[in-house]
Length: 233
Ligand code: IPE
Ligand code: IPE
Ligand code: MG
Image (cartoon, rainbow, N blue to C red; front, side):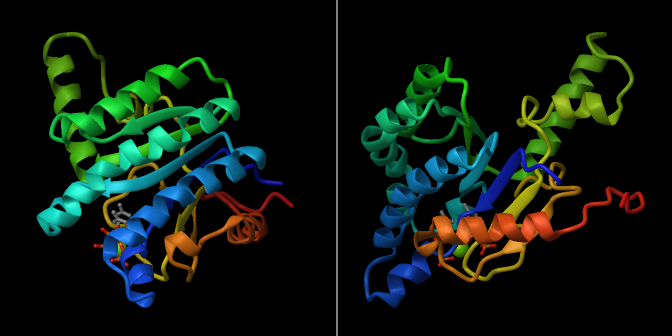
């Protein structure tokens, strides 16, 4: 049976969830944050080695300032409520994305969570925060070019290029889930999902529960991954 090491989730539909209930979009984000904790714990219990969640894209700055500012307060809400539980579950927090232009408070909460959980040996909960895949690839190319120019790097191949990506320490994505019925990638892990199985859930992120996660895993296990080769059975 194919194994699922790395699951990546595009957590979409918070706004629509709130609208459906006649509430502000921020309510949907708040509910979504709680769900990150639930799904992370569930995924770790299912034996997933790494769970990457798309929290904020480099394009999300286009949203109204009020919403952006609420989204930037979520790291505080998340880590001040749940860091202890993540520790108890031996979960290690990491992040990918550009830390330089997010507000200091959000950055501090991430840095603290990363440092405090650094010794944990269970699942990696990797936040894509202010992350854009094109930005990541261009930055990787720029850094490689500098290293090559300075004699610090040899000829480029796929393995070496991967080391310049923000996911250098992580395995390729096996399963990519997007919630809320949208079927697009929106600048998420373009390089890393080359052979990922894509599963789209109709549920909005705050409604996406353990049972739906299991359904996505079942769907993954039914797929026949060939990686360009032929069936082995
Ligand atoms: C996902 O929910 C959260 C972020 C992108 C930050 P949305 O806010 O995109 O919700 P919809 O798509 O408007 O319903
Ligand atoms: C993708 O969702 C980004 C995150 C989940 C953080 P969006 O809602 O921003 O994507 P589009 O605009 O619908 O493609
Ligand atoms: Mg959306």
